[in-house]
Image (cartoon, rainbow, N blue to C red; front, side, top):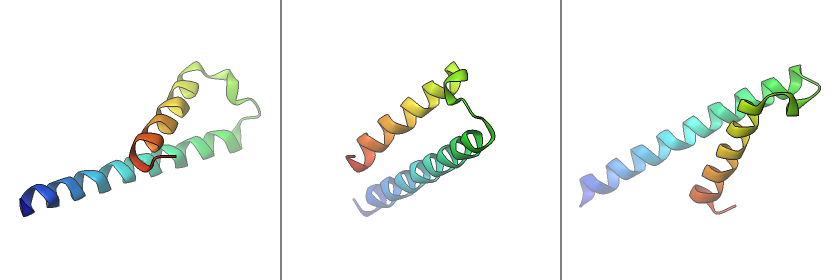
Length: 59
C-alpha cells in the first residue's frame, strides 16, 4: 500500500510540474504576442491546462 501511495505522489508531482511548464510557456507566448486568439493550437493547450487544473485541484 505504501508503494502505491509513493507512486501516486510521484505521478501527481510530475503532473504538477508539467502543468507549471505549460503555464510558463503560455505566459511567454502571451507576453510576446498581442493576439492570443491567433493560434488555434494554443487555444487548445489553454483549454487543456484549464481542464487539468480543474480535475487536479478542483478550480
